[in-house]
Length: 164
Image 1: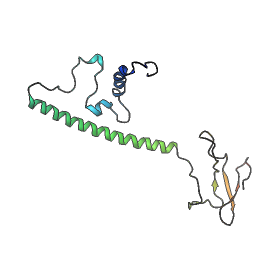
Image 2: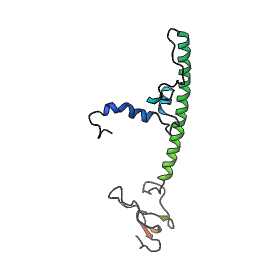
Image 3: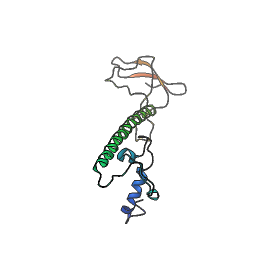
Image 4: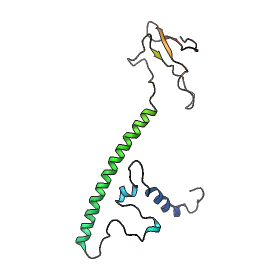
């Protein structure tokens, strides 16, 4: 948008913000304008329609106070609902991320999870960049350890060569 309107992008900004704030967002399960203002925004062509909430009356403070109190109460309820929806969406996104990125942990010398003879292991490669494979192909079986448990003799899966 900015590239095509370098000189008048600020004129287009209200319509861009309207397009962001008007539709229902999945994480809060409502429009952001509803969570912030307690009402849905009116699109420019529908300004003549009656709003959901009554407008303040001139010269009648009691009605105005009651209207503001009801709006404040309704907005507090809407914001609590939005917060519950955000917490639920965060939990779902965290679980989805954990499932998608679950992988074998590296076994390092400082952990007590050293593989025993007979265990199957993967060999981690030193990566040149983000797009290179993180693991050597194949699954290897631990055949033996040296005296200090620093070097293992591995046997490769069928079709691969033994590693030591």
